[in-house]
Image (cartoon, rainbow, N blue to C red):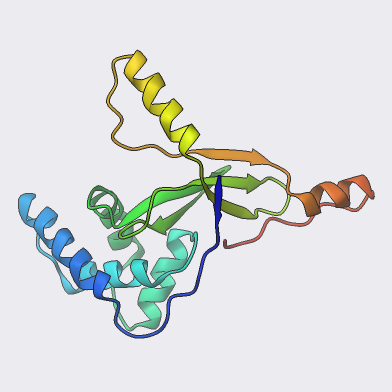
Length: 173
């Protein structure tokens, strides 16, 4: 099993952005939609984000960049961004849904602490093999999946053992 760490992306233009925009433009054209300035900015902002984020953070990024796309514009773009493989739903905790950039990244799964909200990305080929076997046994061909394991991290367990009130879940991971 390989654990993954989020690493900050260096500043400057990432060549993946142009490739992602081309892919997104093709998807939009297939649906008789245009790659507007706001949609292009959403792709750029999404791919510039690091880690798991709520959509409201993406909306704030756009505003900081001077893009006048509304929250509704971003939410309407979500299914298209997901279909194009630009974004993917990453972590769901209660009603809160976080997303992450998917384009150019390897598939991975998540461990989520119910105490503090910490998220650990991991890859484990045995899980992937088992999922394919289960799907085939039931006549399915897998196209995508999300795998989240919920529990308590070591720090939250130690606090609980010491009788300390649990930490509030983190707002972003």
